[in-house]
Length: 122
Image 1 (cartoon, rainbow, N blue to C red):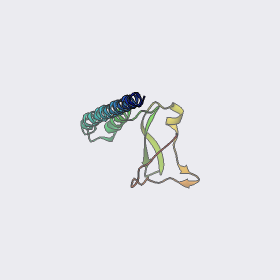
Image 2 (cartoon, rainbow, N blue to C red):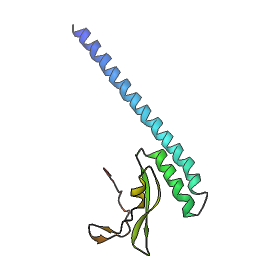
Image 3 (cartoon, rainbow, N blue to C red):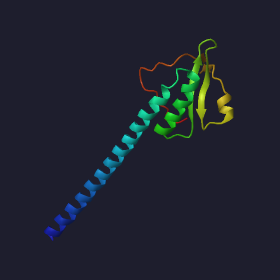
């Protein structure tokens, strides 16, 4: 019985190793696809120096790189100190029309990007 137990354990270990390898290969393919998308999209982003052309291209890039229900690029209007949507996809018209002029009663300002900005739920 000891031999049968060892064989069963060896088979189980091999199956776990095969599953781990398949998962690693899937992650590698996903990363490779995302990298190819990023490289392809970078040429689109640099085709025009005009912000009006770049904003929709950023949305397209975001849609290929990150799975989400909606995508928005907010820009701060320095003259009015209000955040406005520069480009979007998948959000309601009502949300797109909103202008943010304060946050918790304080005037809005530009966002520092010295650390990643993470939104767990929006």
